[in-house]
Amino acid sequence: MNINDIYGAYNWKTKENEILATTANVLESYERELFKISGNNVHKLSTNPINGTLSTIWHIPNRFYLIGGGGIYNKINLNETLWKGEHFEITPYYTYRIKGDNFNNIAATGGAGEVVIFNGVRWKSFINYT
Image (cartoon, rainbow, N blue to C red; front, side):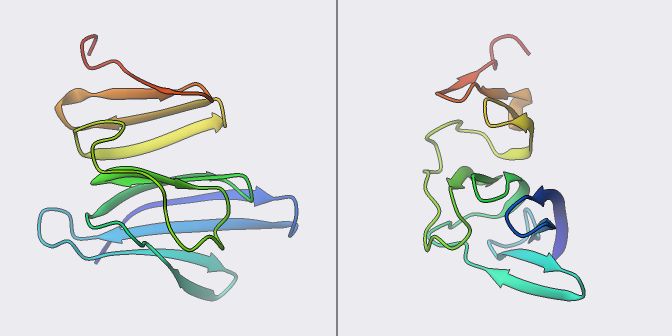
């Protein structure tokens, strides 16, 4: 599978960089993987209950994790068993990239030119402006 996105952020709790990567062969299959890279070790993480492919990841360690592709999903801690979210809950379009600079300033871009912004409380679509 292709590595579609890789993102790292400093984890103040462990005093290390937390590096995560999404993999999938978009438009070829629904296979997907999420990996945590620690030094020379790579650990596979759960993607349950996600059914679609993954193309992006962004996070604040031990506080907020977002992955996207065939939907946008989140969790508070990587040790949680399930990702929360639904395929069409935030946007009906495929999500190609999620990036932010804090919990209340996150942007995601996707199919049909859609941009959605999270302000810490709710997501807003700018599809009619792009």
